Image (cartoon, rainbow, N blue to C red):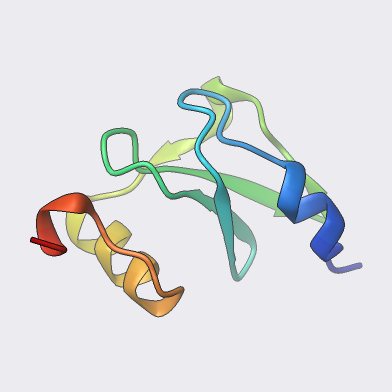
Length: 76
């Protein structure tokens, strides 16, 4: 079951409260300082901070570019 666009619009990163983007089976925080990703299993997002992962800066940047976002450092 995919996530609805309405749910995706209201979900936020548990740590920074930044908007999220859906990348495969993960929700990825758009915050370059935290770079958190949260697993989505059977259409249910796991937003527990302790169970999330921190992405490498390089991997996070690839995801953000794919979704039309980028870190402030790359928009200068």
